Image (cartoon, rainbow, N blue to C red):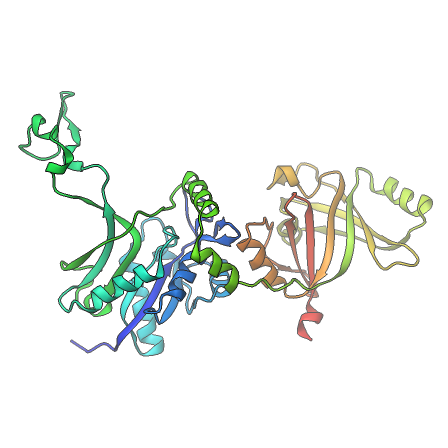
Length: 406
């Protein structure tokens, strides 16, 4: 067998963060006390002195950008065919190993598998786990688990006749009633830490082998449902947490560079009537008229089959524009009914900004709603995104591409 390049004694953290969560939408980037869920595992790994590199494996460009903003490496985008509900840990770890060998000529001897859904860990405990596997030359892997509070040896199965019987063949019902101390301890696997040896995976095509060190972890919160999210938020808010402190220190937010108020949009029920009011009564001047229909405007405003006509106005001594909008197709399908873009009245505020892609990532990481990823206009001169402030007001952020080029 051909020798594969293993970087002896190196330890890399590998954090899987796919985009297709079904139980909690966007689970891996769900905001927990101001930071996305995946950031907790990233920062914990960076604080673990035994870990040399922190790598996120994801199929999502959005998650990749967020992970990078917290200091992780995302050297590749994971293929979709190994990123669905039925994909295995072995598949994404094998993919990472193969990628590093092919593209960097080698891979770490140890891979620390950290699931984002177990966000609260202690770096020193991770270091202890790494040392245990490094110091055991015969072990093939290490997995964490915590002591089961109730022994499954005292559980029942129900047979076809409707009677309970022990899950242990030959164990009597009287034996099940014995104190739990009479039964062997049982451990529940958790996501606190798994560590694998790349040499074992390359030689055997399985993750853990038959010499898996039993690492007893502290009880940990694992996130699978929205109730788990609420429990986690409560726990983080009520307790002093080293990881939260480090997250806040590490991820110092760069102030958004908002250049100016670009315009204020007002959705009208009758465009010409409103035009008459603003020009004849308020004395504003007409700047331009336009109409937009098609995929671009659907993507930007978050509506289907949008057909918009608008007039831009301005005061004589002010460059700020008023944009009167009329939605010619009121039966559009609303993507967000409570904050729809064609709601009559004050529609949105528009700001000119710089670095709109970074702003988009920041909005996602903070849990704010974005109707669309920054989208280039058909003319190619601006990128536009619609988003919401904390109260649901619609903001249109525009980056002039010529500004970005300079």
